[in-house]
Length: 132
Image (cartoon, rainbow, N blue to C red; front, side):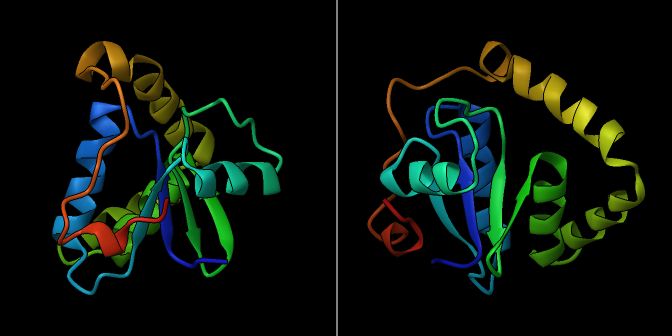
């Protein structure tokens, strides 16, 4: 199984922008990426008894452990370059509060940021960072 993989909604503009942000600030290239709609993404959802048609969650696998929603996002931020890694301080906020905010944004992300007709295709120089 792959380690350090960010799973994201491949048709969501906010999610795709988030992936671009992570790539830009992941100078050590710690993370790889896969859409939740991909074969790999579907396999991970099924292996973890998660709904294979629910793409409302940011998911990250770090050293074989799955993290979702705000905890997943903060675990990623912790691995990024300074000053983004300072965002990890928000892990002290109880997850029900963090995930409440996360769920509100996730519920409205298509309305606020739009949606693509198909998953993003990485550029040739980023192709090795994506799992299909």
